[in-house]
Length: 72
Image (cartoon, rainbow, N blue to C red; front, top):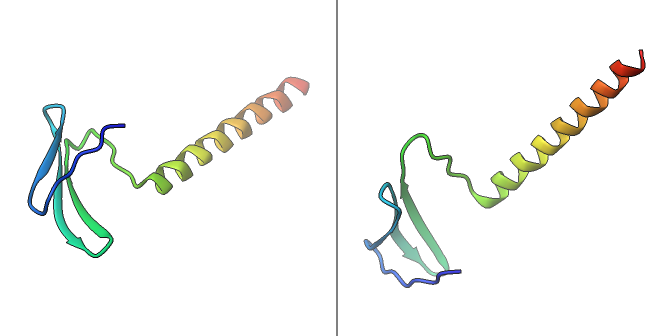
């Protein structure tokens, strides 16, 4: 893991097209701005994990459905 220190109004570049901006620091909370191409999906980690869980569930349901079709 890379750990960097940044202050308000400073930023970090990821590659050539993704910029993470520090917008505000309020106590223990930091507000970030993310500038990225529309083709790059940006999610909070808890949303990303929920999407992954739904995808696994959908895959499992599809597999079960196909197995049931084979039995008929």
